[in-house]
Image (cartoon, rainbow, N blue to C red):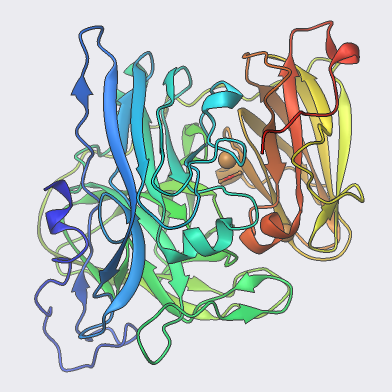
Length: 477
Ligand code: C2O
Ligand code: CU
Ligand code: CU
């Protein structure tokens, strides 16, 4: 029942104007931005929040009058927003009603590897999986998506993705817009290409994979958001397979970046442009005035190719309820600091399918880390653009291409963009959940690269046991 308004009823009335359905002209008609519903948990006797998710096939009307087969969680496209607070224990009953195996990975969550939903936690077609863990990390906008080895790109492209918002005591009182769907707006940005028959075309470009020509916001094409408040917070996820978004407003207006992948910033950063690569999140607050009609756009992407300029969301404002200004200080976590004795490692991203010369092997442990340790990792990009994501960890970016990161990227993160022919240094804090037999992943989050093998595996183990940790896994099946 929860899925009833999403996505099938997503198309709102035209917003007026004489234009066609295209998203570019300011006066063009549009579709009301879908807001993923919040997933209601059942509360168990011990306080555990129990959520149900079903991965399923369906069909959506994304383009007017066109039926597009799509996949979603609890609905035909994308998934509901999961929300929980630091300290909560959460449990999931996940069913796979697809005809293919899948997994559900909690991107950005610091949790035991066995609950991570990576390529080892396969849910067979018709099967189920019930992970459970206690949330213990700062407030942040995380997400969930499939991670079956070799098939992640197509499953995400088909529509499987949702947000997972973590709150904490500080975020609740931070003074930021926080009415979900009113002035605190989730925004999953994706690009698709529609074939003539309405199906999603896996339009591949050399080296990077899918780069669509139609922009969707929460699965809505030509999306329009009618603002009702003087300030709106957008929790933006780059949910694309390969595209990098260079976000700005069509009139160049400044905005405040208040959060990144893995938490709020310690103070807002004013800017008029911020870029996010696949899987990165940015939270921003934009001020509006009555009568505004402004577009969130992307201009050029920053891969090695011309990604193009596109409208992502039109924002209209009529009578606005005043909002309080963004506070000068925010309760973001302190930067992760590496001790002088920190272990340093280097990961070289080769071509588009290997790291340090090796393709992903599900039975090989590439790296052994002491649970809870902070290490310095250097990611080297000899040729193409890539980004780099680490499971079960959060990091502070120390340097990109020899320079300190932009202020907007200075908070806790789990994914970092590394420009072509450059490198990044990061201080990484690993989960404190030792388990020598179940690995976490690190990989490029350009999904085609991940699928082709630009991924490695690490385990976190009790400090002092690194040397005797087996580097081979006995895999079932
Ligand atoms: Cu977003 Cu390994 O994942
Ligand atoms: Cu992840
Ligand atoms: Cu890559």
